[in-house]
Figure 1 (cartoon, rainbow, N blue to C red):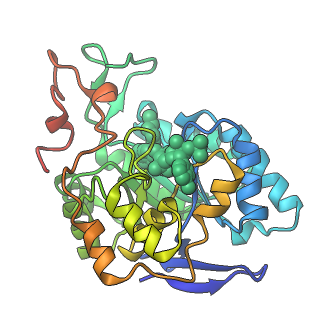
Figure 2 (spheres, protein in one colour; figure 1 turned 45 degrees about the vertical axis):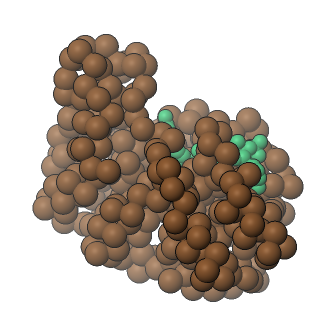
Length: 319
Ligand code: NDP
Ligand code: 1BO
């Protein structure tokens, strides 16, 4: 369950405790496809009270995110009060490229350490791979070599926690068999249109915290106007966006809604002093028609050449 804490600036925020003992704030600002990440990050931290920012090398906005964080620190927020997540991209998924990739990310973000470094997707891509990939451009990776390097980043205090994204139960088992430092976080697509209960349960069982990405359904599905969400929002006098964010937290996950708009950035974090009542929470948990928004097809599937010839292959045929 989330815990309410007061940060050094006196802001009330909910956080979850990770396996490492570190705290992850329940809400972070997403930055994928952000148009003006510098301003969004600054607004989120300084004006809206966010303490968690999610980014990735692949998003191409780390310089801007870094400028936003720097401006927020200049405005008086302490670095130690912030939780910054970034991700290792698939082209860097080899033993020798992990550390240089992290150093590039730290340099872009103008930071001395990351709070959390995640493997973005568990597939290796060749530099310059096409979308969808051509034959030979996508492959499995050296699990033990890469994870040992991730662990060394923790030991060298360059990152405080490590974790993964877009995993399956099968892949989690494989990682746990080799991990000397456990993944603290698994970041997965999760919203009422793709609850992904199997992974949530597997993570809970292993005390791995889950961060729910695309909590509003991303740009691809309209959960904001879903009747069950709208009904709960109407009863609570909240917005559908707030209900979706609150639902994620009540499920025990942190979550990272993205917005370019300062009003929405502020709206999406006003979810700490109320709860969705059990009946409405359950109704949202029962939304039918479950479907992934981000299935990895464009990134990793080559229908004529292996190893991933279908979306089902990407997800190890787990539903
Ligand atoms: P979200 O579910 O956060 O939805 C973002 C969309 O919702 C945007 O179009 C945004 O528009 C709109 N929006 C934001 N707030 C509101 C609101 N209150 N009411 C109505 N619409 C709203 O999608 P994302 O896919 O961006 O996921 C969030 C973050 O998760 C990403 O930005 C990224 O950081 C992370 N992520 C990680 C992945 C991984 O592989 N690990 C994969 C995908 C995402 P506008 O900007 O115009 O407000
Ligand atoms: C291509 C990256 C997907 C969002 O994390």
